Amino acid sequence: MDAEGRGLRVVGDWLLNEDESTLTNGETVIHVSPRSMSVLIALADDCGKVLSSADLQARFWPNSYSAEHGLHKAISEIRAALGDDPRSPRYIKTYARRGYGFICQDDKQTDSGTTPADAVSSRDSSSPPTSASVAVLPFVNISGDPDNEYFSDGLTEELLNVLTNIKDLKVAARTSSFHFKGQTGDISEIANKLGVSSILEGSVRQSKTRIRITAQLISAADGYHLWSKTFDRELDDIFAVQDEIASAVAKALEVKLLGEDGDRPISGGTKNKEAFNAYLLGEHHRNRGDDEAALRASISAFRKAIDLDPNYARAYVGLANAWGRMAANSFVSYKEGTDHMEVAVDKAIELAPDLAHAYVAKMFLLMSYKRDLLSAQTAISKALELNPGSAEIQMEYARIRCYRGYADEGIAAARKARDLDPVSIFANHFLGHILYFSRRYEEAIPALRHTLEMNPQYPKPHYFIAMSLFWLGDVEAAWEEIQHEPLDWMRWAASSVILHRLGHIDEAEASFANLSADEEQEFATIQRADTYAQWGNAEMAFRNLDLAVEYGDPGLAQLYVDPFLDPIRDDPRYIKMVQKLGVPRAHIS
Image 1 (cartoon, rainbow, N blue to C red):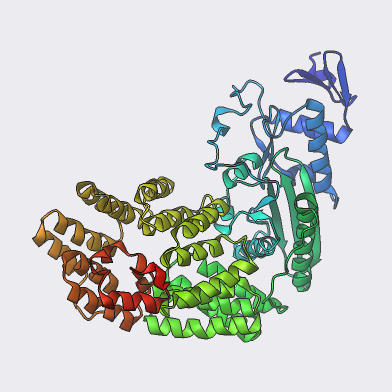
Image 2 (image 1 turned 180 degrees about the horizontal axis):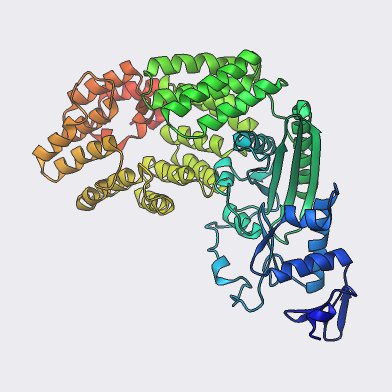
């Protein structure tokens, strides 16, 4: 009879005796619990495959509410017995939000202990993640109904909002966390990419009357669970569930990561479950991107939330942001969009004066449409005071400081935002954007190239790279680069200036004609002013700047730092304009 026929198995350097629940290596004999032995054998028998946590729990802990805890304990016991390091596993690998897999022992290993397919490049960061750092991966919808997806995503965002308010805790931003939605991978690899030391993950099962939410906090260093809990409640108790999860997670992180530091509760919410559902649906549509149908669906959902609870401040913020995007994308006129936005954002602040993201919306309104950078800075400074851990707030603070001429502060905040949201294409592009307007062109180009490595079709980086090359004096390279820009208006604007500098006047004017079919049109007033300034026609440059003011073109916020306007910078009309924006007099020469 062979070894397996007697309940024995060879796993790497170990002999497993199922009947006696022992692992033997030479003279070393280690006893494990029978259930841990059964889990180990199940994993080893399916080496190279991923066995889901749910299947393992159902198989070895049937009908037990402690199944999840039991599986975590078994995995820890197995790893301790085998001397397996979760950071560089030889035997058992953790797959985020999925389960565990046994590494086949005939697989070739790299020096780091991972198979070549699992090897990943190091995170681009100058310093390792601090212990006080976490990423919240999207909670998995296991309800069996795809229409409930917005609810599990919304719950994840609620937890993110709570955690970013904990002092000194670094929380990976939503964009980076949701980058891993629907993906599987090793916990340590995901944490390394996000620059955090721990991962919070979970699942949501929703039925007609009940909801079960499982959450677990995992250390990236060793794969061990710092905290886990299952919440089984009536659906009517969703707000009690939300509060309990938030406080439990915050408490666990506070103990494990933060010592005695406190946390700040999130304001501006609701206790009306139907309003809460409508709000989550509004956020779901708004996060789909700058699509008109999605934004209009978002507005409809936020309005429903407000109708159900007129004191729901966060719904007013969502409504304000949706109208702001409608105006920014010219789906409605600037006036219509900003009128709706102003009413909503002022109501949000009235209802919840300590709601950080209400001041972000206020800042966007003041900067882009009211052309008041000084008041916009006051608003974003208030938001930063309330929630310094938000990548979005750091970005908007960077924008204001850069546009008002404080380049170093703007760049520092943009870098911090990128560190909080490392796999976000927008955060990486935004850093290049700030470096460009800070006139750090040599640094802007590689940052923008990195964005294109992340997504070669992403709009705008080719434009900013082309113009960086242009201002550095490499006009031929600028012309080659601008051909790849997918946004027509950006390509037309840059080409008008580049071709003119190259002496191709007819071609430059043909490109410019795309921007100026009607000199009185609302579209592209800033771009026309830029072109005229570079062509040496100051009168037409100011004529278009006046139109920009009349129409409320949001591009006016960049007036002080716009390099295209350098030829008219000493004109009294220009100085008067930037002073109205709220640029310090000391910055105007």
